[in-house]
Amino acid sequence: MTRICKVLDCGAPAASRYSPHCHRHKSVLRRQGDPDQTAIRVTELAPFVRLVRRRVARNPDSPLWEHLEGRWRGIAEEARAGAFSAVWSRHERAAAAEVMNIDADCPAREIVVVALAMFILWRERPARLRSDRAFRLQLARRVRALSGRHSGLRYDHQTGTQKRVYREMTPKAGAILGHKLALAFGGAGLQLAMLEERERERARQTAEDINQAIKELK
Image (cartoon, rainbow, N blue to C red):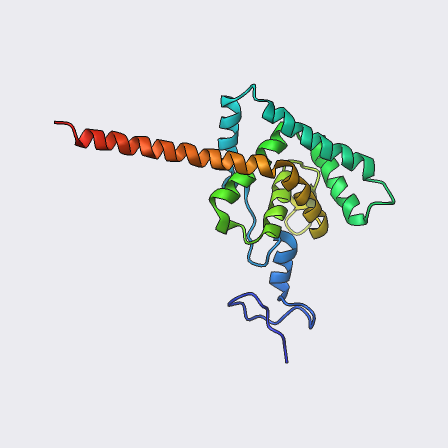
């Protein structure tokens, strides 16, 4: 009997006798971290990036930013030390290569801002990320997108134009990178998310108090 993709309401045949997913959902799982996950786009993350930038601007002298930048530098130093090590697995070496590319192209502060923004998004829209695995891969993809080294141009002979093509990160390298980023920035990111929630609640309460005071005017 033909196996059916396990994703709800899909109904397509499984990619193989051993696969629980059809070809499409198998590809989505590989690229996004979950068969039901869609990519977090830069435009979707932009409001949360602005929140982090505003927090940095309001606290320019906070030692937090330097501490977090130091954590990224630690990840980069570890990657440079092990990228060509025979002791590391090929997936660890692939993740190290991704880290070195990101570090070569991007300031540490920008990496910190994007990583923190991802945690705020996760806190405020938990249903947007289908699983922890999907979140870590989306985190890795958004930080990786800060570097242009995974993309290039290919000449299309049919149209006579150049098209941008992207080199996909392997799922295991993405999982390793996402895990490192989560360990480095997860605590701070979730604390910032809760701080934003408290500030919104205070603003809401203040607005209610003002409205109530207006109603009580004689």
